[in-house]
Length: 582
Image (cartoon, rainbow, N blue to C red; front, side):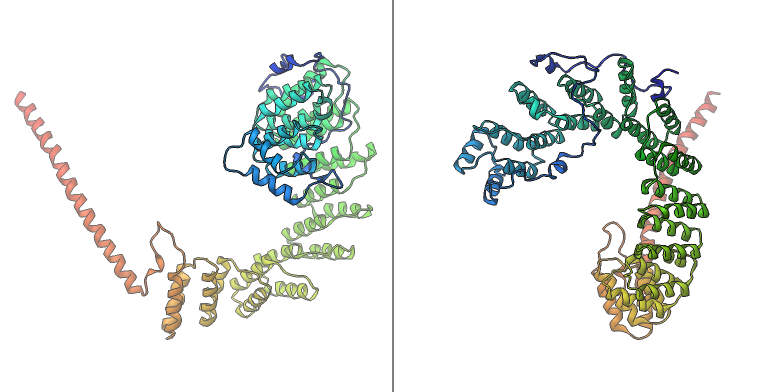
């Protein structure tokens, strides 16, 4: 096996490594010498850093000047000028800003760029105006943000033109940096233009800026994993002494797990050990989480045991996926054993870990184990929430355990925990299915006092139960509340309630819900179900439609008989003509 075969699949989808990617046409016009593109540059980034959107990175220091020399008035004035519906030329922009006595202040330009980040032409025009002002030197934050706005809108030509202009004017070493070129690589990779991304990487190498890990990250992040592997192979061929860093291996492992190719994961892991690359906690976290999600919990436990050999102490990043994987496989006792080891750590398990354990025990039907985990959680000072208790309520609602559910609900209230909307819905669903109306109305009153809203399905179940128990006044109140929330009631529930109100002589209430239904929104294509006051009117309408359809079918059948009679005569004529010839 060759040294670089470890990164590739047996079958190539696209081969780029047969030749070194060519420089863009504009690179040959630059006033510097071209170096060997795949050689190691002099300026390196010490650690690979994922470049997020420059808007977020620039927001870390949104005001580089502690005493900004601009006010909200200047900001609003520039916004008004740029929002002018008439086409803005460079001369008009210069005159307007000169009349307003506004200069190119860095904090002001940064705020304007963020405001108009979806209007690349305006941002570009303002940047060009600022460059022409005497004494102005753009900062890295403004320059990078302007490049980000242009590339985000697809204006790559403008971005490249600005980069080349800064290089020719001598500001390239100051402004053209890892961030500005990394934005171009990332956006090219996002659009699927892999060759342009590689050309930007080559361009960065001519400026002695190392963008290799940024290139790999962009390719892997947007689904070009094979091309990333080919780039690694090419670099290893041209530089036999080069060994991929731990960040490169982490990227490859993460992406091979994402595409669910565990064979390549094992090959990359084998290569790491052959190259004697020491894995860290991030590497083991990726491996353990990936194998647990893929269902190979035993393999994850093997790697979990190998961490001590490399001097890596497991933390939450490793313990959490292991616990989740064991619970998903139904291995509750082993999950408790891992939890005990987790408790020894100084950081200890988090709320998410305890919540995952409670979920696993409740799904398995072991509520006693779930209760122990809940008490352990409280004893360690981690307070449960309504989401934690909802796993118990799910089990009670599914199996119809009313008494246990009501007891837990009361204890939850007494302990000072606030139930959420899902808690009320689970309780009401269980009580309505078990026909415990009194308890259901208590929960409904608590829900009103907490300002929670019922969905249409649970409201329909409650209305049906109230009708069944002959609590018609309360059913009308729920029906009215359902209409006022903009929901369309179930027609069967409406018909049942309407019929019982008339049967009991409550005609005013029957007219009231009929008027409410007439105001409810209905479909424009389906027939209106609620347009009939009585069963006889509905039956009469159905009979009229049936008679009309019968007349249509009679007409169609008569026309078909006429059409079928003509070919019969022709066939008889053909038979008689053939007999005469014979």
